[in-house]
Length: 456
Ligand code: GLN
Image (tube, rainbow, N blue to C red; front, side, top):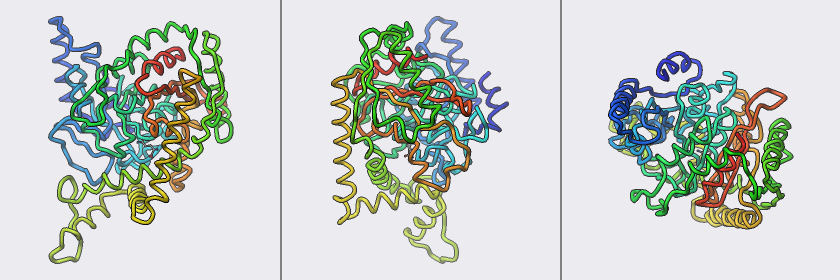
C-alpha cells in the first residue's frame, strides 16, 4: 500500500531519492511469515519505514543529497539501519535532504527540493524534509531523520509530524555520514508520539562502534508515551523559555503555543517562566562550530575514495590535486562550499581563539543555562520553529534568513539534551501546521515523550 502511495504522489512531493520496492516487499513477506509462525521480531515487525539518505544502507545508494556521492552504494549498514532490519522493518527507500544536511528547506539538495504535502509551493523544512514529507503524505508510516541543529524537529513542525532528537549519545552515530560529530543524532519521524517511542526503542541504546555512545539502559520511552497519553500532568513543572518567544515568532505560531501550554496546565501541570540568557548567542556559536566540524569531515571527499571523480578539462596529465579540485568544484553545492570556507577560516591559526574558541565558550554557557533552568522545571517548552512553512525560493538567496529558522532548535544540540516536536494545530493566518518543542535533561528522554503524548 505504501509503495502504491509513493508511486501515486511522490512525483509531486519528491520525498524520496531512491525507492526499493523489491527489497521492501521481500522484507515484508519475511515479516508475514514470522507473524504466521507466531515469532515476531519486535512491536514494529513488518511496519515499513523510510530512511534519510545520510544513513548508510548496505546495497542501497546513499548520496547525502550531494552530487559528490552520486552512485555510491555503501558496503555496510549504519547501526540504526541494522537495528531496523533486525526488528523486521521493511525499508521503503532513502529520503531527500539538504546536501550533507546543511539547510532548513531541502532546497540545497543536489537532486531538487521536496515539496510540503500541505501546500506543494512550500518547503517541508530541512534538512530532513524528505523524511517529514514522506510521513505527512502517507508515503511511509515511519521515517528516520538526523538532527544536528533541528533537522528532525523543524521539518516536523512545518509538516504536522512528530520528530524526536534523542539525547546525544543515546542513539548510535555509526554509519551516519557526519555533518558535525559533536551535534549529530539520528531519531524518529512519525505521526504519533507513541509511534516515535516504539521506533526509539528499536534504534536506541549502547553501541560499542560509536565512541560517544552512552553505556546505560535506554530511558523507558514507550511507557512514558503511554503514561502521557492518559493526560495526567499532575506534578509536572513546565518551564517556558523567555528568550524563545515574542519577537521573530509568527503570531499564529505563538498563539497555538500558548494554547498548548494552557492544555498542559489544565491537565495539572505547573508553569514557570525560565530565562536562558545565552540562547541569544546560540545561532552565532552553532554557525561557527558546525562549519568547523563539517569542513574537517568533508575533507574525505577527495575524488579518490568515494563517488564522483571529475577530470579537469584541458589538462593533459592532471595531478591528484587537479582532480580533487575539479571534483570538489563540481561535486559540492554552494551552501557546502560556503560552510567549508567559514569552517576552515574559523579553524585557521590566528583566528582559532577568536572564533572557534569563543564559540566553544558560548556552548558551555548554553549548557549552564539549561542546567539552571532544569533546576526549576522538569521540561522546557518553546515553539519549534518561528514560522510556518515558507514558500519555495523565498529564503534561498539569503543564508542568514535561512539560518534563523533554527533559532529554537539549536540550543538542544549544543547542550546534547533531548527534544521532541509535536504538532500544535494550524496557524490562523495561513492554515499551515505549527509545532511545540519539549526539551528535557540528558538521558531524560522519557520526559519529552510523556509531555509530548499529553499534547496530542
Ligand atoms: N538548519 C540546520 C543547518 O543548516 C540544520 C542542520 C541539521 O540539523 N542537519 O545546519
